[in-house]
Length: 360
Ligand SMILES: Nc1ncnc2c1ncn2[C@@H]1O[C@H](COP(=O)(O)OP(=O)(O)O)[C@@H](O)[C@H]1O
Ligand SMILES: CCCC(=O)OP(=O)(O)O
Image (cartoon, rainbow, N blue to C red; front, side):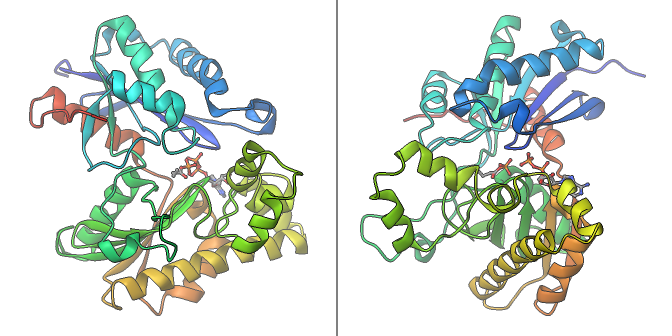
């Protein structure tokens, strides 16, 4: 076999997992999903406090697998809550590191991606990149309106996987991404439902704090008046309230775990409460799909469902029952983010693209 020109380490820190992969050019030589339960990460006050823990498990996994990191030529990560930007591959620079550390647009595990990639890469004198971070912003002007002057809707979603899956779904419908209208439903620790109109995500729920369906650990849309009452009650700090919305809602809040597999087991054993909460998540997700169908004026080529919970047959059959009248439902369980990150880095390493510069 010819020797690879590039060896890329791809890092994807999610809210419930850390995923890593090593690729010799396009060829995957190692992939690992490390799932995190409350015992692992529940004790950390801030996402940044998880930095050493997440970095070390990555280095340990590589070491255990006997991967020689000195052979790496670049590191590419899913990056974080930066300022809104256009899609593409960005070289990690000082301005980006500063915004990731402070969490310019909020706290999420993907903030750790660029930071860890940078530390590993700099010790090896190789470049660190992020590709299609969660703040890729292609919202149409109408989608920016919130209804309250001074509050603008934000584009915060699983941009990397949305784009990769929308391309696949368009191909399945024998169209290019630029020709197709696809609704992508990503079922991760966060759930985002986006309207892809001719290659642009013109509307999508903010997957982090306070929009869309509830999720394995997020609250999604919460009645605003009740939330204000809680906020001014003097019972909670701002950090506590943000944590309630981002890590203590949804499955976690109602059922005490963010692990969809445990909930699936409980349902199989006849737990009616678990089934009710599970169905509530499907119901809210389906409502969001309906909303995006309206955004696309009913002209929808396919609904593409992806992410960890897309492995769950009950979730998929309940969702299909509610939305398949809108368009064909295509299911792509899991995600292809490690490969998508690698391909982003390879395009730059091969000089097919120039790395974009993150500027503030
Ligand atoms: N095979 C599976 N069956 C059911 N649920 C799953 C499966 N794999 C993952 N999940 C659940 O899907 C949810 C999101 O997982 P994942 O997409 O890996 O999240 P993230 O990347 O945000 O950490 C979690 O609740 C996880 O437990
Ligand atoms: C912040 C939007 C992306 C997101 O929710 O990712 P996870 O599902 O990995 O938490």
